[in-house]
Amino acid sequence: MIKPLKKAVLPVAGLGTRFLPATKAMPKEMLPVVDKPLIQYAIDEAREAGIEEFCLVTGRGKDSLIDYFDIAYELEATLRERGKKSALEALQPSSVQAGSLVAVRQQEPLGLGHAIWCARSFIGNDPFAILLPDDIVKSGRSCVAQLVDAYNQTGGNVVAVTEVPREHTNRYGILDVGADDGKLVEVKGLVEKPNPEDAPSNLSIIGRYVLTADVMEHLAKLERGAGNEVQLTDAMAKMIGHVPFHGLRYEGTRFDCGDKAGFLEAQIAFSIDRPDLGDAVKAFLKKYVDVV
Ligand code: UTP
Image 1 (cartoon, protein in one colour):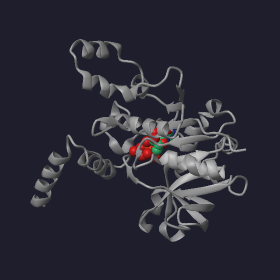
Image 2 (cartoon, helix red, strand yellow; image 1 turned 90 degrees about the horizontal axis):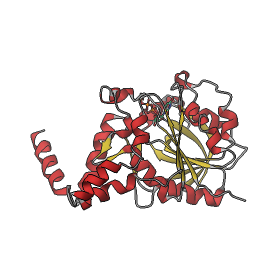
Image 3 (cartoon, helix red, strand yellow; image 1 turned 90 degrees about the vertical axis):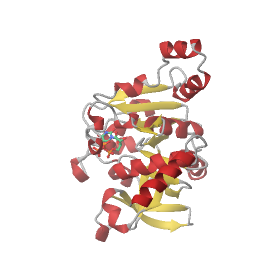
Image 4 (cartoon, helix red, strand yellow; image 1 turned 120 degrees about the vertical axis):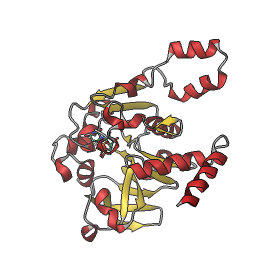
């Protein structure tokens, strides 16, 4: 029987070095795309997939991420007093049900695999989703919901995948592909950040996963991989052949907001089709493009 998926882990303990100095005193995951912090996009996406329990893996200097999900009593009271209805409504998505969000600590950023292992007590024996908040996906149906739909058919592990330019394979976890129906691909192998000449394909994993709890047994060995970090990809690779394992070509566009260019593109993509901002964004883009 396929166990229902109700839990998500959101690792947020990285150093965010690519965004220094902005991330010197604030977490990367609190950077806003238009008017919502990255972490909010991830929580919204998970909720749309029916996920009810969240675990943030945090570290030093990341407390504002936890505070963000608290009720801001004074602020709300002031807004109510002043009749600021739309501002009050804007706060709504940042409230979570009491007890549905927990935080665990990753004392040292030893890698994504280590961060996920820190959530082992929260996961127990349950299947779970992982969302890396620095990837955001613009889509009709939420990307994690698409993964959960596939998981409900296949069970086992399902990871979101997308084609990347061959010269960029050394930035991502890359699939060795078996059977492929154009949407769902069988995962035969996984390699973390291979050089283009060694890459088994150009199909890359993005920051959305559905995994069974078995991954924790492999992570528990805390073996170091690429970059001397404990790599999630290496632990997942050990599961191939033991659980069903698929890649899903999700519908939607991913923005790598951990990277400056990706972050800037996301600002444009998420503002240009908004009724309150679209015209202004188009006008200033035209202005700058004309200058170039
Ligand atoms: P990144 O690879 O983007 O690393 O992590 P980073 O430290 O956040 O950013 P840069 O590369 O220094 O600019 C991907 C995700 O995994 C989390 C990060 O917080 C991010 O959400 N992560 C990474 C951890 O929680 N712990 C780690 O040890 C590493």
